[in-house]
Length: 77
Image (cartoon, rainbow, N blue to C red; front, side, top):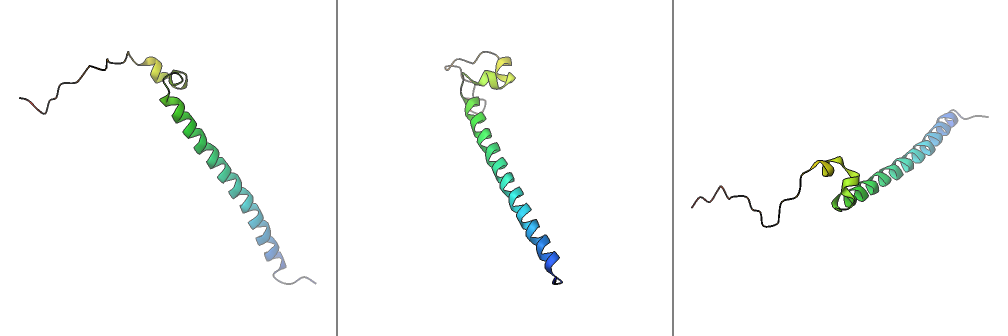
């Protein structure tokens, strides 16, 4: 004979099982996206791979020489 709370307990068990599976998949997806973000950031910092990763690097001009300095506007002597 069925008890009055059997269907509720069965539903709760199914919901817990489902939510555990969804939570595991979301954690895996979040971890994969975080790892991809780190990999892409590393690739963007590399001067050899950055032009292939972003069109901005191809559209920029030539870099300034290392000896170039902006005039210091604060110290007007």
